[in-house]
Length: 378
Ligand SMILES: NC(=O)c1ccc[n+]([C@@H]2O[C@H](COP(=O)([O-])OP(=O)(O)OC[C@H]3O[C@@H](n4cnc5c(N)ncnc54)[C@H](OP(=O)(O)O)[C@@H]3O)[C@@H](O)[C@H]2O)c1
Image 1 (cartoon, rainbow, N blue to C red):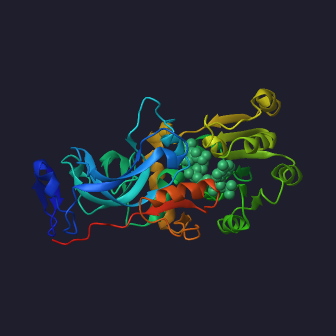
Image 2: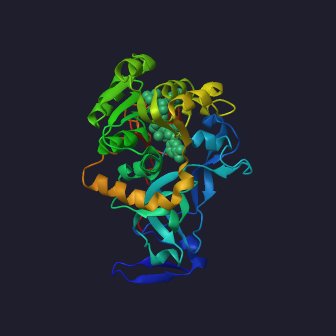
Image 3: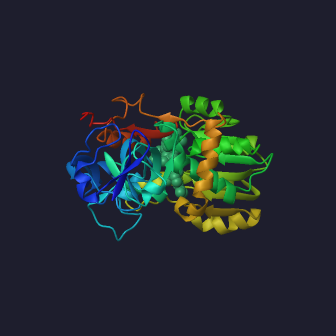
């Protein structure tokens, strides 16, 4: 059974067996078929791995689920780890892809209707967001005030920075923090949250435009590693070393960051994007020397994976939403205005958006807009 909020606010009960005939809250029919992206072959090359399928059945929500019509979906560096089957090697293609979205609830199960209603705008983290419609467990959704892509930036990127720095960063006034890929989806939040903790923040990036963005969100020392030698700058300007590193790049960047650590410094491994496109997904680091380097400084390296911190997720999301609502947090969105073929609109532009990220072009979180294809009023 499903329920639907009527114009008077009363809940009408709709039988699941009529699910193919549900009306959405604007009075448009939910179609039988939709487009979605499907991983048809395991590969870190997104274009080789993923196919746009045009005639897929619109899924039905179960008792505790929401059916969401996606309006914006987020691109993540790990989309290519997912398409390469690195998340769960037991899952074989074909499988759905896309980690997060924001859209309207268009149908829902009976249990889900105790907390949500048709027409509500929600943001969510769940597999299969690269689709016109996605079924999402209600527990994975967060109500948001409106259909703004800024809310989407908080779902994975914002919470990763928030929880990792809170749990592993031990930030305090006057500490020096280095953020790599600082102008990107999650880096932008690591910079701002470290500034809120009264730290001195250094951020790496690959262009002058990104440096200017980093300055605008409070970064004390943006470093464009294409024009300045990162290792030299850190040695000259920060001779006492770096207290906390939020490290997303891996490989040579990781090695430079380890060498720059202060006594009792800590490096949080957020990712290693420089390796994701390779067959192993790894980026080589000078691991043999690591124990000696850490011991000499009583320094530490710790990994962070958001999925292991879900008990803290809701509180993190609430705090980030408050910060954004009060104007205390910039949620920079990159919708592809400056991309070679223009804005990322429609599911087929997810391919371009992934390329754009791996060309290092984005400032802020890359978001793809899915215009609604169902407009017919009954
Ligand atoms: N641990 C977790 O739970 C978790 C959650 C979310 C994200 N992450 C990680 O956070 C990192 C950033 O992810 P994101 O989705 O927010 O992406 P993003 O920062 O929005 O975009 C990636 C940025 O990385 C740099 N880059 C791109 N390709 C590169 C390459 N081949 N080698 C070196 N640098 C490259 C570019 O910035 P520059 O201008 O700086 O070069 C690019 O803008 C990734 O490592 C991702 O796996 C981890």
